[in-house]
Amino acid sequence: MNDDFRTAADRVLNGVVTSEPRVPGVVAMATDRQGNFYEGAAGQRRLDRDEPMTTDSVFALFSTTKAITATAALQLVEEGRLDLDAPAETYAPDIGTLQVIEGFDAQGEPVLRAPKSKVTTRQLLTHSGGFGYDFFSETYNRLAQDKGQPSVITASRAAIMTPLQFDPGERWEYGSNIDWVGQVVEGITGKRLGEVFRSRIFEPLGITDMTFELNDRLRARLAGMHNRNADGSLTATDFELPDRPEIHMGGHGLYGTVGDYMRFIRMWLNDGRGENGQVLKPETVAMAERNHLGDAKVTMLPGVIPSLSNDAEFFPGLSKSWSLPFMINDEAAPTGRPAGALGWAGLANLFYWIDRRNGVGGFWATQILPFGDPVSFTGYIDFETAWYQSQRLAA
Image (cartoon, rainbow, N blue to C red; front, side, top):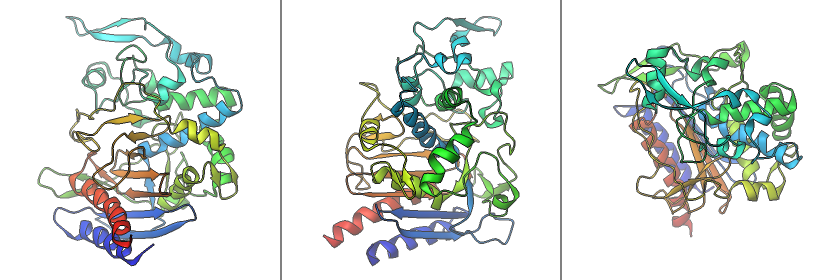
């Protein structure tokens, strides 16, 4: 790493915690194929407590969980135990009971019909399975408001028993698809998802502080959640995901540190190899990173519940597709990220990218709602841009 990037990255982190409006605290790291070359922390874990943010702080990882669940599924594909194009109900029978919702009748009751085809695990992995989220979907939000459909945040089985919004494969829409991939993994292995992760992913990667079930050891380092108010100010909240979840939510349920997530990113930079062993075969990595969405494209995420998400989109105006674990930017991004690179995010304004061509990746972690927070997101973009700018200066 050159000094230009370290100086620029430190400036970005210190800037977002001291400017107004600000973020309460942030951890950001960057890695190459060998290891982290930048680790930074700034601000506080929680605004109403005198606890500085540290690089070993624990975060609710939200949807950055998804790529790890996808990795567990890919391992089963390698072993011949999972056919991505077979009906997902083969492995998770409950998904076969779900119907498509076409709207609501005059009495406000859902109008349901059978899907035209059975959803596959490939469609679930690419978010073309038909599922949504209540904070991005008017239909799901109405089911929650009028019919008491539980939020996925409850980590309950009832929360994922939602109707499909469209026939499988019809389009891309972001939602609880990967929670169902977790159910597929559990159905094949006969184990809870957390145990699958621990033995098959975390141990080979050297990950020690990542879990679906938050304990006192990790809670002592937990970064607090904050709400961004309309005037730009922040309010600390006591939000936590259930520490004894009914189901391990493969779409969003993990807690962990940025340092541990960097080990996962590095595995993708190193063709599936972890610190303590191979997690995926190189040919699986090459297969998985390709576009599996066909001609469909990733679209804007519309903020339906303002307290949880703003309207949000990565690189508006640029074509984006989906691999099996990640979003793909089909065109070079303004940050300097090349076409074909990978990345995604988590609800509380966590963001990451994986640039396999250049052997670099990074992660930016805050705990702020709603998603698409302008201060945190701009800080992340500035952080990523600083890396590519430093390479241009060094060339």
